[in-house]
Image 1: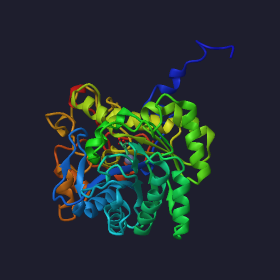
Image 2 (image 1 turned 45 degrees about the vertical axis):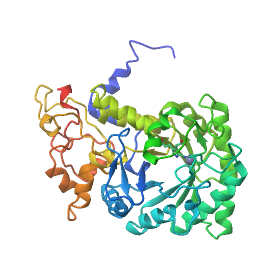
Image 3 (image 1 turned 120 degrees about the vertical axis):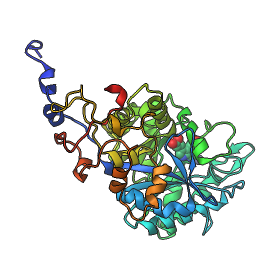
Image 4 (image 1 turned 30 degrees about the vertical axis):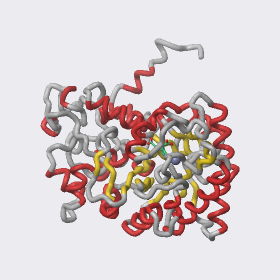
Length: 411
Ligand code: PBG
Ligand code: ZN
């Protein structure tokens, strides 16, 4: 390391879009993203989740058409959360043969057989007290909850889930689920363990989304956010218990933990960009403080760079619709002084329709109109219709196939 500046000039490789793209170290693909969705029984219309702009609770009866819409957009995997109207002390609806968990899995599986179906496996949306298991003397009873997790896992597997995804944060839950699945003959049903799950304040908006009755917190079973060594230990325990995929949750504030686990295990690793992370970006953009399209992509790229293979994110449909890349605001053939894309933006700021949403409803019922057709007809949408090759990363886009996706305030 003798010769440094002026011999070393890292800026040489940043001089053009082409160079920057060639030397970019990290990319994410649409296939890496998992879309978490909230599906409520016994309602007729989409219900906007006010703390997560652009995200709606989906009425159970519209689930099939929503899943078809996601598949058309290129989404490969969904994580299902049920919003139940049948609460009791143990969350027994979760393992009922025709309970909400089973129905959601079955409907999804039948709507799009090739969709990868992940069933969130917990009780907090199904218990009258909102805790993630059975309560005994004001404490969640670990081992009693394991039995019920096994029952729920078998119900979801029977309905056709590809992944059982236990998020209850009980000790031994992966082992209990693996043996329940194997005992019922579901050797090929995988487990994506929420293996390092912190007791995070970033789950705030999810409480509204999932409609949990919880008063208090989950600190007696979810991890202390300040613990890095224990985070690795938790994931390695789940690996030993038979997890097929590990997960860190939340993601953005825990990139060090993602990296640690990436280095400690050879299993695939997922990371969950949770409701609060989503909300902070959305509201920051709505306030005009940050550029949503770019911050969303930067946050996802950073999670990938830290070592995650897969990312659960409420932005998955936004990325599916608008593409992986967001072009730099200056394009050689279109000087920044010309604002050609401004009209593509709604006057009131960035479009907030993403998962579900008004457009979603229209598209889903649009007589088979493809997402692309819907896009051309909808002036409020960002960007312009582009070829599907845009969903691939890299390449040096031309101005004719790409439009800058920056809000008008930038121009
Ligand atoms: C419940 C569960 C939570 C999330 C996923 N599963 C909330 C919690 O543990 O309190 C959070 C997801 C999000 O915030 O996006 N087991
Ligand atoms: Zn829970």
